[in-house]
Amino acid sequence: MNRTFARICSLIFLGLSSTFLLSPGVSASPADTQIRHESIQLKRVGPERRFGGSPAGVLYTLADRAPQTVVIFIHPESDLRNTWQSIPLAKTGFAAFGFATRYVKEDHHLIMEEVMLDIAEAIRFLKQERGFARVILHGHSGGGSTVAYYQNQAEKEPPDRVKSTPAGDPPDLNEYDLPKADGLILSAAHLGRGFAVSRKLDPSVTDEDDLLSVDPSLDPFNPENGFRVAPQTSQYSADFVKRFEAGQQARMQRLVAKAYGMVAERRMYQELLEAADFKTRPLKEQLKIRRGAIAQRYMTIYRNFANLYYMDPTIDPNDRELGGLTNSRPDLRNYYAHFHPRNTTPEAFLSGNSPASNAYSPKLLPDVTVPLLVILGSADPSARISESRTAFEVAGSQDKEFVLIEGADHGYRPSGPKAGKGDQREQTIRALASWLSKRFGR
Image 1 (cartoon, rainbow, N blue to C red):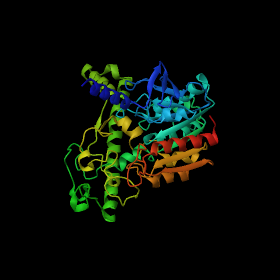
Image 2: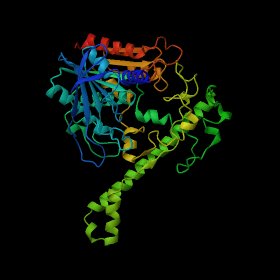
Image 3: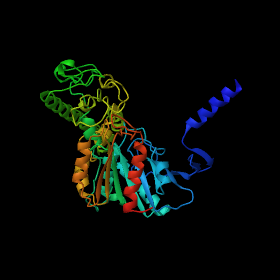
Image 4: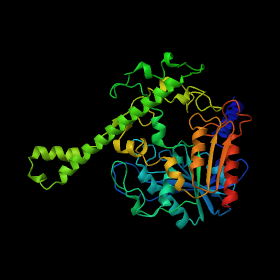
C-alpha cells in the first residue's frame, strides 16, 4: 500500500509542470537549463478611469546570460505572463517578457488606445531600465492587430497619430512617448478584433433583447440552410453565405449605431452638467443630470459564435478540426453567456470589438517598416491562412517572412490529419528563434 502511494505521488509530481523551482526567481527544466524569471509591475500611464488595473509582466532569461533581444508576448486582454513560449524561447538565449495589460480579463471595459500606452511603457522599461538593445512585439490572435496598431502609431510623428478613442474620449496618442519596437511577430492572428467579431455575429437575431429570437432564413444552425451536427460536416450554399455575411454586416451596423447612441447620451448629460445654467436648474433636474453624466452604460450582445468557418470545411479550407477554438458545438456555444463581447460598455465595443476600432491590420501594416514575421498553424480552427497572407502582403516591411507550422492549431498544439509526431510547439519555438537570430542576435 505504501509503495503504491509513493508511486502515485511521484507520478503526480512529475506531471505537475515541465519546470520546478530551484530558488527564488530561478527555475530549471528537466535538462537543468536554468531560467531566471522576474515579476515586474509597470506604471499605469494615461487618463484616470474606474476600470482596469496596472500593466505587469514576467521577464524570463537564462540565469547565466544577459541577452540583448527581448520578445514581448502580447494580447490585449489575456494574461500572457506565464505563456507557454516564454521558457522555451529563453532557453534559446533570447529574453521573453510575458505581458499583461491593464485590461487583463476585462474585455468588457477594454480601450485599445490605453493598451497602446501599456505597450509603450513596457518597451520603455525594457530598454531604459533593463538595458535591452532590441525589443520585438509578438501579438498572438487578437494581439496581432494590437501590435500592428502600436507600431503604426510609433512610426508616426505627432500630430499624425490617433487623437482619441472611437467614442471621442482620451487618450490622444500624440501626447505620449511611443518608443518604436524593432520587429513584429503576428502569430495566429486575425485582421482585427472588430473584424473577427463581425464574422462571428449571428445575423438571424431579430430582437437584440430576446436571446431566442430568430429569422430561420438566416439561421446558420438551421438544417434547411446546410447545418449538420458534428461529426457530420455542414455545407452552406454560395447564396446562403452571401446573404449570411450581408446580414452580419447589417447587424454589426445596428450595434455600432446603438453604441454611438449610448455614448451620445452620456455626453449630452456631461455637457448639461458643465453648462453655465446648471446650478439654476431645479434640484431634481440637477440630480438626474449628475447621474446621467456618470452612469456607465452596458450593451448585451447575444449569439456571437456563428462563424461559418467553424462548421463548413470548404470555407477557407485547411487542416482544422471543426467546431471553432474549443472544437465544440457552435450551435450550442452560440447561446453561452461567456464568449466576448457578451456584456460590454459601448466605449469598449467601439474601441476594440467593432469596425470602428483603429486596430485593423490591413490599414495599419502598410505604414510599418520593421522586420515582420507572420506565423500560424495549418490546422488553426480560428485564424485563416488567407487572412494571414493578406497581412503579410500588405505590410510595408521590406524584410518579412511567412511561416506555416503544419498540423498546429491556434495554440500550436498538434491537431488534425497532419499532426505527425506532435512536436508543433517545438517547431514553433525553432522558427521564432531562427527568425530572431538571423535579424537581431541574442
